[in-house]
Image (cartoon, rainbow, N blue to C red; front, side, top):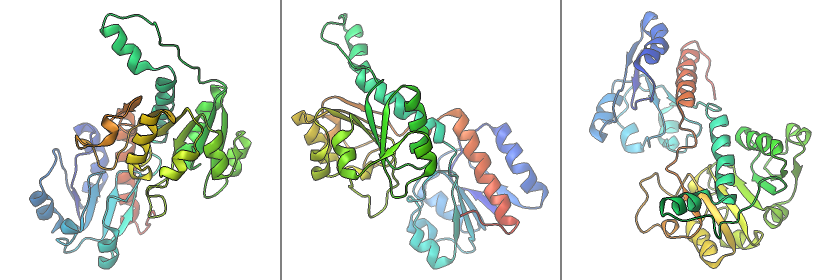
Length: 313
């Protein structure tokens, strides 16, 4: 089979060789990708592909329509909302993702953002660079804060584990309540209680039609005055205009965001760029050397399983 990569995987050539070796030995052809491809190059590559390997770049219907014999897509990423699943269903193309590869990485940045907000690290750094002192930079500790987690999947639970070590009170709202979470000391509460009680609200929910702009103007207004928001999940779960308004008004004390309505670079007119007390990072929560290696290994393992007749859903 022709196994075609449409994106580089941010791993060394040595590791790529190790991962593709068994497939080559089994008689399959692996077409590597070492640099970002143009739209035309992607269309050309997909035409002869039986199996496709992608990461987090959008795989649009325009590209998928060029597929002639594509049977399977291995996504080296947690989510698959960047893939046109309607076209895949129409063509009978199966999809697997690399769920779990960056759980620790996203959780670590989430907690780092909480600390950065509470200790006003961004302003403190700027103060030193401007020749200033600590005057007026009184901050807050993380210990003892009530942290609300929206979504207790793998990443939400890992964040809770780290927060427990910091001595936080962790509450949560999730579509399904997990015994593992209760055993960790997490208290499940209603959404209204989560919004009203959380000193810090951390989002860990996927993007679906039901969760798009889930945190809207009305729900932001329900949040505790002076609370902080951290979003390392999906940008469109939050109404960015409403969030910017809440930051300007002082209803929220600050927000740390790794995700936005679009992939960075975000437009200059995005209201979050001029909102006060914000910490913005360019979608890096998952992006560590270790996680890139893990996701590549999972993606190629999913391909091997598919070739053996096992579809990892």
